Amino acid sequence: SDDRPGSMSPSLDFDSCLFEAVAAASEAGDEIKAAWFVERDVEYKGECDLVTATDKKCEDLIFRRLQAAFPEHDFVGEESVAAANGVLPTIGDAPTWFVDPLDGTTNFVHGYPFSCVSIGLTVHKIPVLGVVLNPITGETFAAVQGRGATLNGERISVSSVTDLNKCLVATEIGVGRNAETVDAIMSRVRVCVETCRSLRASGSCAMNMCGVAAGRLDAFFEIGFGGPWDCVGAAVIVREAGGLVMDPHGGAFQITGRRVLCGNPQIATKLAKVLAAVPDGPLEPHAPAR
Image (cartoon, rainbow, N blue to C red; front, top):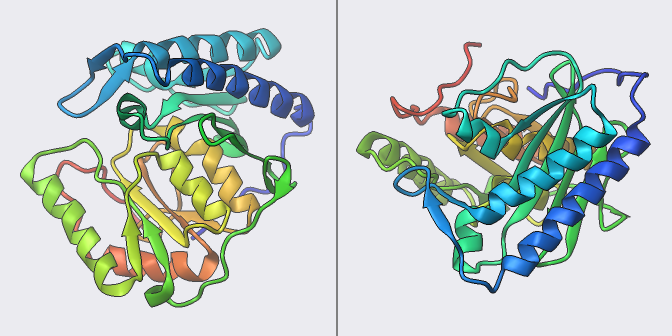
């Protein structure tokens, strides 16, 4: 089910919010471009989970700009949460910005041009604004609830494919390497290979979701990604492009659930039924009770 909210908060200036989010993403994008061909200073958050000096520098500059413009808002960033031992702060009803300064860090480290800046805004825990910027391809996806979604200023919409066997689906392998998690991931890959035209795993949750919004992909799903900073902004972009955003097993999308399925309305609903037949791994974030 698509958990689409009603009216937006009337007290927020969404033009100003969008302007500042795009400007902040552009500044961070310039940093990523400048560092793209420079030797990367890589740290490990886990066996396969990387972080670089660029991640931290970009989050700092995004926070500085947005906090100066909106001092009364709350802020949640991937690197600041990591610095707090991965503890997510309590998400309230106040306007809250979610920032992934560099979604697709592994791609950045390898020079694979599928990385982005991801910025999302929630009000009453509902995603209402999103900006996703890929500085290497020069693409800026943006949306405000109720206004449609754009790519570099031009309106975009999800695909019109209706048959699963004709759809292109994306997922991710993630960073969990224990046997049960790998088995669950590969079981989902298998059912997609058996039912869909083809499968992609390109390394950025936010970019994959924007690919759905632009009609390049018919659906995307992932279980166990980093946190709400990966998906809040892109969820607005997908919904405003006419797509559905939900749990991979078909329930309501939860911003802190670390689970997402999005697609055009026909494909998302059909794919959720296929994926629901595959049990989650014991260490994966589980589907909410329905």
